[in-house]
Length: 186
Image 1: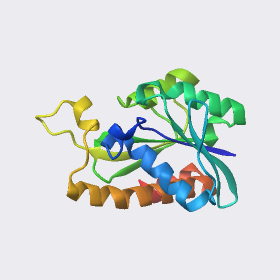
Image 2 (image 1 turned 90 degrees about the vertical axis):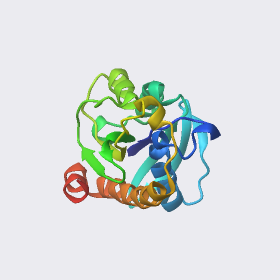
Image 3 (image 1 turned 135 degrees about the vertical axis):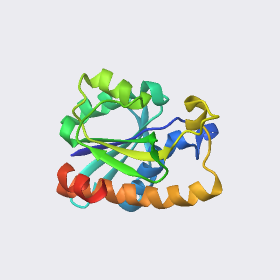
Image 4 (image 1 turned 90 degrees about the horizontal axis):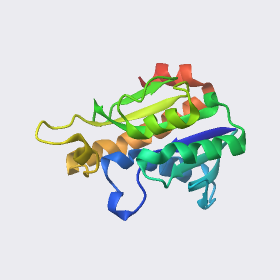
């Protein structure tokens, strides 16, 4: 059993923003692997069952807002009795260029508030994560405003392709493990 968590903020106001790229990757995975299963509300989030290859998976988008994602993740992880190695968190990263992917088996939050809250809630930094580049933050911008902004048309094209590559990376992680995923996508 795999638990794949895409981070973002709920509501139409935040659709298409840089901070919601984790939701977009989960939506792509659901399109590919959920076999028509409809999302349902659970664990203070939206979940959908999927079969990624032969791996039974739960796709989760917390609806708690980014900074409170940890509670939703803990509820789902504990309910499904998923180990931290079988948990993958997908989030934005403004320290990475638009379209760049970075996969890690563990590590700090790097200032990403959703990751920070998950680390606090599960009391460890040791779980896989996939960061999707949305940056860099322009010098005239405050980071908090930048992550809530939408991509310009050029960036949107890059991000659409990146969402597909990120979903491919998740599939590699589910089927072959974190080392293969890091080797292929970093």
